[in-house]
Image (tube, rainbow, N blue to C red):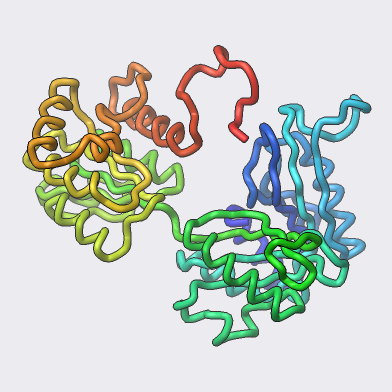
Length: 381
C-alpha cells in the first residue's frame, strides 16, 4: 500500500470510497510480492499494480464490484489449464488478492497509518482476509510496544478483529514481523489459537526504509547513492574529509556525514541504527580508512550486506591486514570483495549497477547469471 497511500488518503479525506486490492499471498513465479496494491478510484481511475499487467483488468472489475456490493473478496489468480481464455498469470505463478472498500467508515485508522508512513514511523496493519463473514475485512493497527501510538494507550487508533483474545495473539505476532520489516499471512483458530485454522490475517509492515551507508566521498559514491535511493534505501555518505563530504556533491544521498568511517559506523551500531537490512558499501580503498572500518563492520551482530571496493591486489592486502588484526575467516566471509557482480563495468554508473545487482542477488538468492541460460522459474519461490 505504500506506493498508493497518497492517492488513497486523498479520496479518504474527501469522503470518496475507493477499492483497495492487495497481494496477500504468492506461489511459484509470482510477479509481485505481498503488499503490492492497486486502487480503483471513485471516478473509475486505476492506480498501482498487483501483477505487472497479467490480471489487472480482472482485478479492476472486481474492485468496481466490491465498491458496489461493499463486501470484501479474497480472489486467487493463476494459470488455467482448462480454459485458454481464463484470467491468469502467464508466468505460471499464483496470486491471492484481497479486495476491500476503503472509506472513513471502513478504515477509520487510515489517516494515522498514512501519517506514520510519511514520518517513517514503524506501523503494521493486520487485516482479516479469510474467515467468518463477520470478521472479514476487520483490521488491527499495530505500533511498536514503546511507541506513542501503542494500542493500549490509544484504542481508537487500533481497531480490532472483534475479539480481544485474537487481538492479543495477532498484536504479539505482528510486532515480531514489524521489527523485521516483513509482510506475512498468519493463520489462527476461531479464538486466536496459533495452531488453529479458519482465520487468515494478512500483515503489512511499514518499517522505516532500510539504510545504505556509503563510505568514501568519491565519484563512484555519488552513483551508488543515486541507485541506492532508487532502490528505496535511506542513503548516508560518510567520509572523514570535509572538503569532499559535501551535500552538493551527493544530491542522491539523504545525508552526508563528516567523520572517520569506523567511528561513525560503531556509533550508529551502538545507537541501534544498523540492522539486518542495512547495506554497507566501502568505497574508500585506502587502508587507513577501510581496514578499521571493516573490522567494525565484519563484527556487527546483524547487517544485510558488506561490500568493499578495490582491485585484486588491494583486496589481498586488505585481507592480510584484517587477518593480522584478528579478523577470522568466518568474519571475512561476510564481505563481498571486490565489490559487485562481474558485468564488465567501467564507469561509476555502471559500477553502481553491478553493486546493486550483487545486493539484489544476495537478498533474494539469485545467481547473477543470464536468464537465457537458465531453466525453470524466474523467481525463487
